[in-house]
Image (cartoon, one colour):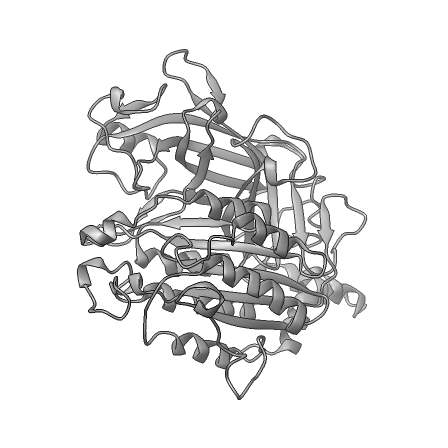
Length: 487
């Protein structure tokens, strides 16, 4: 495992500080000789209604900031780096991010979702939202990004437009601002990171729908417990990628009703007697410990309120704070006086100030009638929580996709780039592009192919519904999710 000292040295190299540690220009030149863009990972989108500063391009929900991470072969791309073919060091808003062509979005298709959260199948345009078309498999195959899963039926969809505002590029880090003189970069000056992993272990995971009753296999949302296994990617990758050098994790098991349904794993362990621990091996063992039994309901709001309390009572000072919840249902184990607004207020307190990210598995796999009745589609309160508390809402239909989502989210806590976007949709009647806010209330997915162009460096990310295997119906959904509220 990489030590704290090696992470610090790597961070110094990335920021170019080796230049001031030696008078030999050759050493500095070698340090950056092969630094080229290697990959682009999109983290998620936050509508403008949750951005407290900055200009608004248009009315939400189609306007906001798209967050992403860029990497070279040796690590994350950060301001002040020297990259191949770039004129000078990476200077956001000056030699990168100042031109509209630095960010290009192609193959843009907006797809309507049905009440079950899946793409809405149609027989004709009468089945679709006003202005949408009923597009055949053949047509969709020509419009969607590369590697997209081509549906087995016609879908309610429409072409969209996605544009990035010039000079809207921003870099935010929980550590030290790498370029204090540049208004496009921000640093929170935190000395470490605290993360609460809030893991659903309720009965519906394995199909135990009636308390301690028999397991009904066809009612299981995640019978192989892939979500619990995927959650291990968060501490593992956060530890590997962190440049802050100090991380601590708490682990909450959710199975029951009210506060009594939230088990603070490390605080209840006599070896620790505290919510937060720093040893990665012990964190992973803690995750394995909740993999044995599933029961009862899911007290989502209580877990977040207890996380806020844990940050204040046991969290390290001057650490950035984050809650990541993996759930397979709505807050069915929360008491009626617990609400999303109360959670937002608690996490927003100055003594807490924590982000909230929700990974919501609304599995299509169960076939048992009781399980089907519990499907929610995307859940507005989860989207609101993630949006208001600077996190991301991931809504997924297949357990097999959770591994990739968790790996990606591990990148989101410490540092990210973002750019202001405007998303609009083609009206098939008028032939004009219009705001997403004019669409009928509901949920929509945006498929797109995003390219970042930095001098001669170019990387691409496909925001697509991707098949996970040739012999499986499972897919991984990296498309952006939008909710249109009723006017």
